[in-house]
Image (cartoon, rainbow, N blue to C red; front, side, top):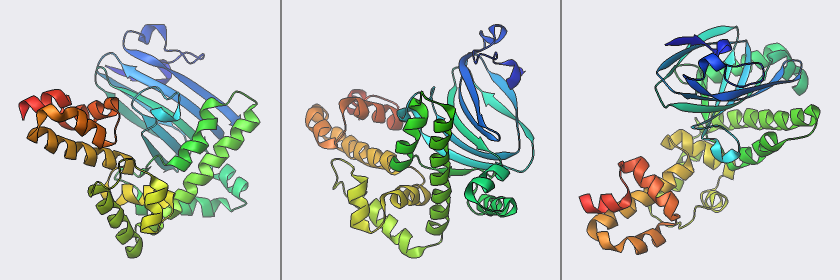
Length: 295
């Protein structure tokens, strides 16, 4: 089934009644200032769908989650994209699939004015970053760092005037621009990459029962945000996900050796029981109990 995004939601942000059998979710779109917008959207498909969507020209700073984004805990990743002109595309959903989106959009002219720069300089900068750091679709992907989480929290919990919300959004956008510059440097600095591989080795040695990014960054000689951004660049996944995977793989080896010793293995993993089981399901497709029985 194919539908257009503007037919999915009512003006109130609720799903249109005639689409309710196919989609659940919401769409809250706020124009804070001329050329500065905030979108919080959730789509869960009840059937296989193709949704046509149009996007205006501008800079998009997007936070993606696997469910409705109500708190920073619901955010999994960050994407930055620059569209020089209006584009149309299709979003494919299989039955049961869902995505949460918190998105900030700003025009290049508005960002230039805010930063005291020339608009052409802003456009050239983001075009260069897109070519250098973007994927095949021209999207730049970043991890959701601890610092960025602290800046996003006021956006999600804000209840006051729109002008103060705009201030929080500017803080997020400015931080992401700094992250882009940091990512660009890390992508070509051999010394920094050596420090990142050192961090990876330290995690794989299972020296950390609890991951302290600040402590690890001091040990390898990088600031915490550079460690998170660079680790994602070098290893291909966020540092916390990699730490969890390393702990779970180690636990899996020990479970194979002694399936009855789960309590001790769990205690030494540094994970809560809920995290432990969720990680086993994600990485092995079965619970730790069944994994021990199978192997």
